[in-house]
Image (cartoon, rainbow, N blue to C red; front, side, top):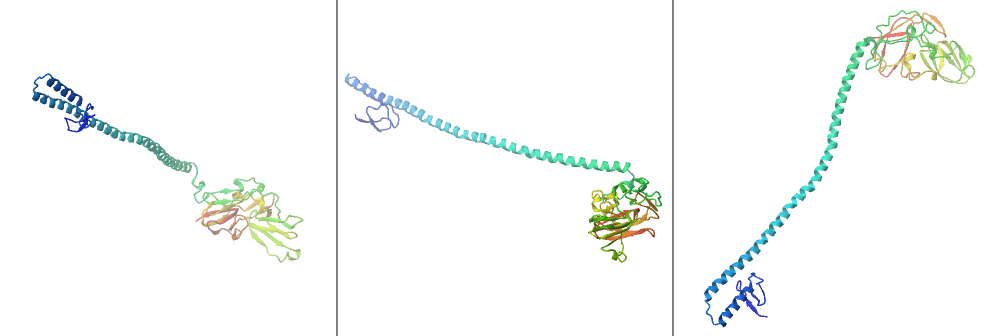
Length: 354
């Protein structure tokens, strides 16, 4: 094997190579030309070398064109690579599509929340309008003196007496017009207070069990005495009150001069109004009131009394507790000031707010 010079670039190549590895020159064609020249010389033919030399550039130019065409193929490959690179953003856009879907899915609950808030607001507005219409219609149907205010029952309220009881349980004479009263109460229905002990002296443990009791004035204040031995009876002071809280112990004595005594458990604490007990600020507004009796007689299965003139009691508890003020109406109308949180206990009396 011998090395020859490439006619295209001058690079040393094998004489067996068909093309130059550097410039791509077709060396087999060169060999054919040399063989033709040898044949011409061998046949003693004169060959004009100049045209042959002219042919060489033609061959070279053709080979160079091929090389250029091969080189032009490389940019095409680069463009393909660019296209592949430029195609990546499309993939990124595709990956962004799920994010858009997720964002839409996330936004859906937010829209629902906004929708729920909207309908809630509409519902509140409608409820408010219906409430206003209800009170408007109620004001048209019910007289003004029967409508309770926000502070409690400020309309005329006549409970007991001839308005709600039989003549067996109440007085029949009515001396006061209660149409303008803020609150009025006559007498408790005796069916609510059965088995009460009326006038008399009783020994605890024999006539009455020990325990918690209430001395109640049926038509005015009740009057009782509580003592430990008979020797103390004369010297024991009377206790006056509309609802007197009592604790009776074994072998004590209790004397009832007016009213009755009942077990404290007799009273229904969930419906105190039926006993003439009202809470200030809830059932009746606080303020100054004129107090006047309603009737001048009382008749029930417990007793019959003429000239009963009613009473009112202010305390810090519904039953028992500290009595803050007791007002009897024997000598005519009185005035009383009620404060929020207090309890007012009424029998045969009407209250008129100033």
